[in-house]
Each structure stands twice: as structure tokens, then as C-alpha cells.
Length: 376
Image (cartoon, rainbow, N blue to C red):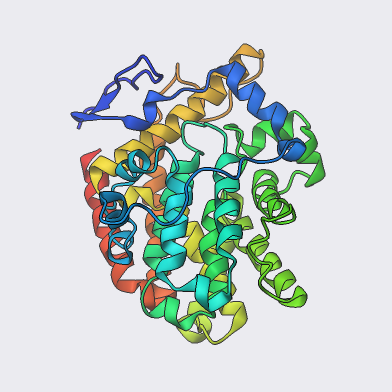
């Protein structure tokens, strides 16, 4: 199709594409909002997090309850926007409760239900209102993670490690300010200096999630003994850090090495289970190009809009506008199309090869991705 100008976004706008309303573009983050996000970075816990919000269970017999049933949560075309409405803007806590309970992990791990509820609400409340990196994105990634894990693979995972794989979804972009690592590194942001300019935001996201667990009444891993709790915290850190796109090639190489050495990853080996969780979370994080067209275009436009918001901030600061962030030079969709073809597609293909429990799902996802690419 032809490429129309990129639509305006914001509460007063009514952006559409290919005849579909772009719901995520009803929000905007002008420079002053991004500056507030950046100022808060690293100081999120200077005041107690909001632990109120979604409470399990949803009303009996309601559409809300139906949407949180296990068979609904594993549908690839899941209507996350409907869940957002039904949960009164708490899609992440609601999705996480449903997913964790669908695997019986509250009982299997002995999780305190009150602690679980407070922690998930605190996580959701600790997200900024970014155009893309917001609780809806975290819920979308959790949904895709659960989709890939569900079935034989989930049954082959130790329950506590499956729990880590699932709660890494809500954690993976926690506190994202709406600007990228390059922006923070160029300006010697204190958080960038803390992590020595390496995987700055990814380190911050998982660090913040682990800090939340240290607050009274929020330690969702407190049901495990001290040694195992520390192992699981370290595993969560390892899993989330590989959502950094600068680690994409390293992850692909590790997956390929596993394939070359033994054809597929072995869930009986702890190192392979970690690699499985890293692969699945990274794949889920990049998974929206594999969603049905009407869902896919929501996220593609949202990420481009967030890039442009960073560019607007850089322009106001008199700084060089970062690549792909200049709304005056290109619409951004062509760069997304290339990213889908050369990064997302090979990732799903290799995931299905090295984790055969996901093969059928990945094949279906790649087929939808190809249909989406053909429509651009």
C-alpha cells in the first residue's frame, strides 16, 4: 500500500491507518512530559509505590472473568484493548494474575496471594505513561511469553523458574522514561553512569523490579528459601538483560550454538532453561509484528510515535536528533518494515528450531508476519 503521512497523536487527535483507529496514539508525550520521566529515573522509590488497583478474582460470570480464563489467555489474537477497558486501566496486573494462576503457580510455589496482588499492582503503577513502553506493552509481552511457554514446555519447567519467566514480562520495561539508552548515555545520565553505559535501561528495569520485592509486603519470591530466592533473582536479571537489542546477535549466536551442538535446547539442563527463557522473552518483546494486522499496526505506530517524541525533545534541547527519531525526515514505517524482516523473522524461525515445543506456534507467527509485511 502507499505510505500516508504519519498521523498526529494525542488526546485531541483521531489517528487512523488503513481504516482502523490507532488507539495507542490517543496518548502523547511532549518534551516536558519526557523531561519529568527522565528526572524521575533512578528515584522511582523515593515515595511508596501504589499497591492498589486490580484485585483477584474478577466478578464471577462476567466478560472480565472469561477473558482471564486459561484458554482465552493463550489465544494469539487476544483483545488486550478490551482487557484494558474491563480492568479499568489495569491490564498488566489483571493479565499477570490470570497467567500465573493458569499454571497453578500460586499453589505450586506457595505464593502469598496478598503479596502477589500488591507486587503486581506496584509494578503496573511504576510504569510511566509512555506511548509505547507502558503497562499495555508489558501486558502484551507477558501474553506472548505465556503463549510461547504454555503447553509441553511449561510442564517441563520447574514451577519456580516458570514463575520467573512469567514475571520477567511485567518487569522487562519497568520505569522506562520514553527515551532510549543512547539518549541517556550521551547526556551522562546518573543511571547510565551507574551501569557503566551497558544495557542501561534493561539493568534499570530489572533492578527496579527487584527493589520493589525488597519493600515490606511485596516480596513475591519470599515463599522460597534464601538461597533459592537469590538464584531466582539472578535468573530474572539474566533473562531481562537479553531484551537489550544490542544483545540480539549474542542471543542468536547462543541459540545457533545450541542448535549446532545438540539440535535443540534441553529443558533438563539449567543453562538451557535460562537460554529458553531469555529467547522466549526477547521473542515475545519483538512479537507484535506477528499479531493479526489490526493489532500489529497499533504497536508499529506507537513505537514510531515514541521515537518521534524523543526526537522532539532533542530538537527542543538543540541537540542532534537521534536516528529514526526525526519526524520531519521520514515517516518511520520503512525502518520498521526492515526491522521486521531482518530481525524479528529470523528470531522466530530460530526460536522454533531450538525450542521445538514452540515450533508450531512460531511457524504460525512467521506466516502472519509475512502477510503483514506484504501489506505494508
